[in-house]
Image (tube, rainbow, N blue to C red; front, side, top):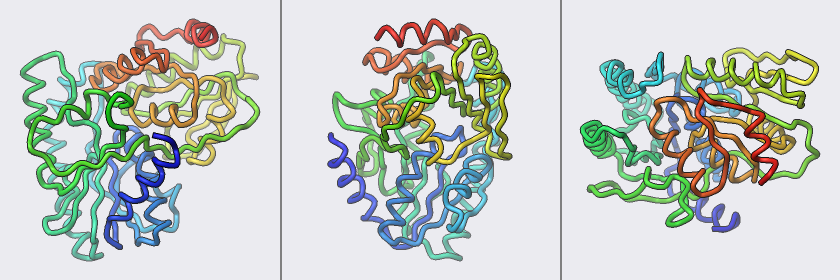
Length: 347
């Protein structure tokens, strides 16, 4: 699908919403909120009245990107990965996650009653729907791979139940052999709401600018794994003897500083600034999150992807894009920037 066809198809889908729209992305890394940015801009372009809701870093980024829009704070899932065993830690946190879903559902109903939403667009916030209001779920996670068969079946059952209250599914991907999400969004072998494929959904725009950085490290994701990867990559960047910029993905306070003559650190960037940074960087290093992959595809950049340890979706995506020959991938405990750059330089 070419870019023009994607834009026309995407805007037509967004145009089908009502006039008063709530957009509510999940605060789990920054991928869910960043891929909602082009949706929000399309809604504004069509002169819809847009409301935004999330929590934590995602809410802070929404407020930075859209200071003129009304925002609401939803209950936080407070997901953490103290160790690489994501399944174990999610199971431990499941009662709190389910409580947060219930509370966000109650808050969404309250907000809808007060502000009269016509449409609710939820990016993986399964409690953000209201009976009688057209509720849309954005997701590419319909078939998350797990090694344990019992876990796989249990998660599939939960997903089936969680998507039932929504009237429509929006999948940010292409259909068929060009699919970036692969098996994550296909096959869907149970009864589900109607599906619309949005194509490659990214807040980035390909622009041509002179190269300023040889490496741009763009971090995101839940703690403590975000900080662990930052420490590993910063240590290696300091001995690379290359111009490196590291974006921490910490949106609470803006900081910018140099740790050496060639290594620069910035806490976070708005979409416009990040777009420029990616355009002026030769190689990108980031997690193998789905939104990050879509950004890289749109920008046409070489990249090293490092999946979050123990996160099955990112581990699957890293292998999937590696098999497609799109990017270089390394495990977090074996990251080697110099080896990755040599590989990318030889491609």
